[in-house]
Image 1 (cartoon, helix red, strand yellow):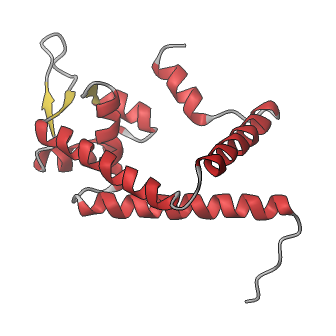
Image 2 (image 1 turned 90 degrees about the horizontal axis):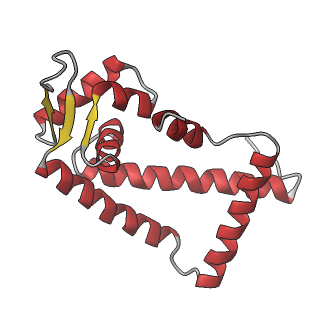
Image 3 (image 1 turned 180 degrees about the horizontal axis):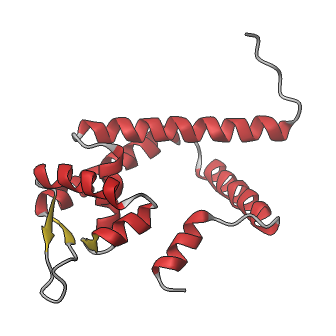
Length: 164
């Protein structure tokens, strides 16, 4: 099938932006898999890390916008791997507090290092000026979409988590 040429520079820009995002995501997922964890497991570990290593199963499900059943499956795998532990609080026998173990904290630290490597590779050869220009352009694009009434789903989730 012959590829159609872009009609506008804007189309080319957006398609390159989407391609770059997909390539970046694939590179990150490949790095995470080297640590023996799946993408969903990584999301749970990162959520715990961002919340000082401790959340309830319900909070994890809400943060990641996934079903409690999916969280349970993921937590079982992480627990078997020794990356998390579940505790029952004294005041609520039905709730489960999920905590990062030391091995879980080490895995999170390793993922940060691997992600920096991917980011460095992606931005390889670019000058500080080029990166500044790219950041300014991406910021403006995001602001244009917000001004047109499109909201950032992450902003909404953060507000809900903080009770706003």
